[in-house]
Length: 368
Image 1 (cartoon, rainbow, N blue to C red):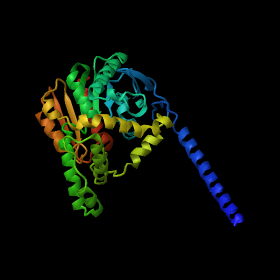
Image 2 (cartoon, rainbow, N blue to C red; image 1 turned 90 degrees about the vertical axis):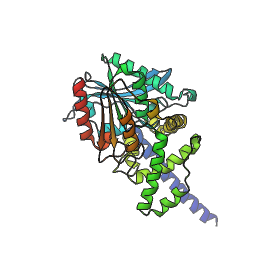
Image 3 (tube, one colour; image 1 turned 45 degrees about the vertical axis):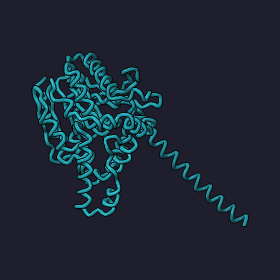
Image 4 (cartoon, rainbow, N blue to C red; image 1 turned 120 degrees about the vertical axis):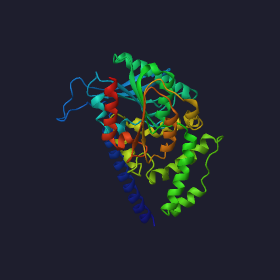
């Protein structure tokens, strides 16, 4: 009996040792893959482009340390401040891989917002995680960038939550911007969530997805007084099916793995950054989502003092197309255009890059 136990013990120790070795190898691999350093902007021959810019910088906005990833083939090009979605979900890793051509025509500034990505810290005061503070941070950063790059004004582009933040900021501080670009525009998110929920239930019926039909039938849509916990429970579950049915981040990819893989392989992030990515996302969502879902921009903003351009995917059911179009139709602006992307869901900037870039360059070419 003792001999048998000893043999079992040796086998278990061997297995544990092998698992430890594998864990160490995997950890070492991801450590090497995660230097957290800016990568040079290269030409077709793999050489660093003269006059290009590629930096990761720590700055202070509103008393909080935050990070920028700045990239451009020509540092004298117009500055494009990109506001990521979420709240709390930086998009540098995605856009840099799916649409790097943007860096040929703009100095792309990927800001990791307060509480998100590289800017996440357990030391951040939750009381500062407000929409008004985020607007203030955006204004301060915009002024900083204009001064640094010696430009009178910059461009502002927002995706998803970033479009909510972006249009509010450019509405309040139009003097800072040439134009505003909204992608997957948030405007009346409560109504958008209602439309999304009805669509996903309809899709489950059309596809005869019995498992989804059963689960969605017991999912309660949050009322206007719902808590953040109720909203998170709903959104996390409902979005799973929105993505599966082609109405999520992208129309073609119904899995989150490609997104996760891009984060894991991005050399601009340290291993610590990658491990805390989800924490920053949840932290931001917990403190900002209720403001987003309970604010109707259609009744708040009826006119803008700068040109407004909306890029909306036909299959977008995270920020439904119809809601964005209705907001656009009632909006007054010196110049405004609404662009429909027939093969995109929530992210035309990553899904139909050629069309997106062509439109963008046509617009900015007339301004600069």
